[in-house]
Amino acid sequence: MTISISAIYTPPLSQNPLLVPSPISKLPRFSPPRSAILCFSSSPPPPPDMDATTGPSLYPLHRSKTLHLVRHAQGIHNVEGEKDHSAYMSYDLFDAHLTPLGWNQVDNLHKHVQACGLSKRVELVITSPLLRTMQTAVGVFGGGAYSDGIDVPPLMVANAGNSNHPAISSLNCPPFIAVELCREHLGVHPCDKRRSVSEYQPLFPAIDFSLIENEDDILWTPDIREKNEDVASRGLKFLNWLWTRKEKEIAIVTHSGFLFHTLSAFGSDCHPSVKSEICTHFANCELRSVIIVDRSLMGSDSSTTNYPGKIPQGPDLPSDIADEKQSEKGASK
Image (tube, rainbow, N blue to C red):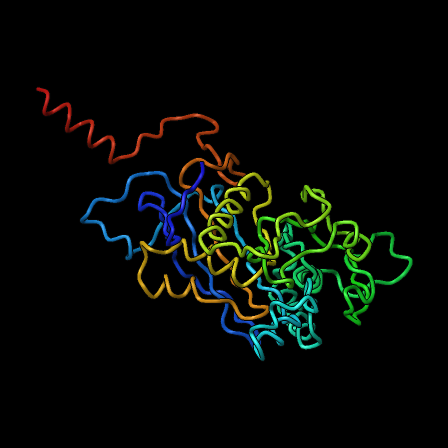
């Protein structure tokens, strides 16, 4: 199913998501992460007497995925752009890399995902194919320092992208793949233009670039900036694509604009505070966890935990149904 989105990034009511916050552990030195349920639906809206903003919701577990959304750590463009917005037009910031402070942010988030057990649960890491997001992804979800003699390729070689950072191992890590759909706003700003795939591959040997169709960046143009509504539409296309993946728990390392405009499409049928909670801009290296729920049979995975029961077979008529049948018999006499 394709989810459409209007010019103000709000899908039709029949396809609106439901977002329900749930507590997860807080990040040290960061804003509290947020957890929510994002639901896709092609069913009609509830009757007018039903309040969509109150009460719990219940969905089959196998029709959900857990997404851990991360904005990249501080890049050189963040620093220069805050001093002077016109710096975003500078080719000195082409494919911006992380600052030393950004690497400190990465180290702190890495410690958090290790301490809370998240690193052991993530089955796949998806990253935008830009230097700052890939550096963040491998630093947060990678296996730590790499040493010669380990029979696995490193996620990142030493000093990749002028990082002055040691190599990072892929040992005991989930797969990493680069996906263009979750890139930042396309066009105009050189910091959002990527390098060729062949330039990245030696720097990040264990990242899978096979889903990137073009060697060079044909999506970025110097004179046209991608519209906000187009970023949001691309974000929903990305979420739809996630349903083609078998993994149930996925980390996504991406960008502020992409996250903001994608998530702004959700929560219109929730309490205003929930809508505000999910749609605020991400801080550098902030993590928020969400559950995405398929209410329209977009996914096809069967449950791995459901059990059919009645094995071996035997009478199992519930008493309430027995009462109804008895009442029906009495009414028919």
